[in-house]
Length: 283
Image (cartoon, rainbow, N blue to C red; front, side, top):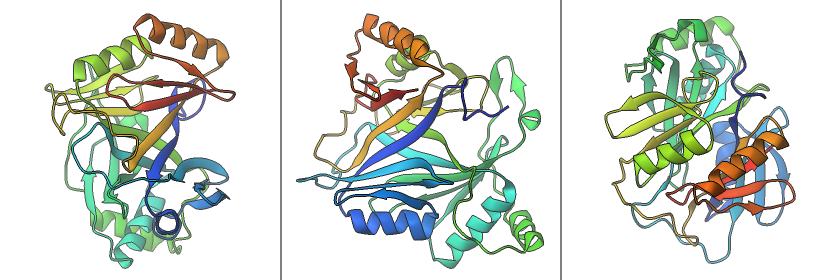
């Protein structure tokens, strides 16, 4: 099962509002290993294997983020296998990057931040057959990662890091929201995701077609936090790729019936979740 292709609904691209386009582009290229697919004076589109995953946008008058807002907790880049994660671990260590790490049972993950404080997860999935489901919820944990095992995997492969390989995708996005109940209603009732893990009123993990999560939602920045102001750096939007135009229209009608505004653009429909996170619905 590929959880990042149709008919599954998945996160396609993340857009960030950035203060320093050159530095951020270089970071995502040289440190993270994405390739520059398209560049203009004010934007850079990066990805892997020709597949766009990240858009950086320099916006006039932008200022650094100054408070606790809804928005990005982290964007999560999914590598095709453990060997690639091991190569990334060594590369990031050699670059002197401060890293966190976790074994989540369903996946192994590395955590870091970009130069403007946006959270990044780089991870690999275990095979779905290895995931443990209990009554519709998948077991996840925050266990120590097997760093020695990863290093051994890299040594056995004997390959130098050459950036993110083809087959790398935006695995999921994790968002700060202002209210979990409202977020649940929007994403589950409105967009058709299902809850796969719930963390005691603090966080929800939701997915389509029994992935371990396409979207994480948390209130760790506080309940009732405001949306990220337009002129502050951080998350601009993220895209949800839907099976077809018919499904997109159906979901847009659901959302409108729930009071969400839908704005039509030539290539996508745009809406905001109840916390003000901007979503582009594409097909």
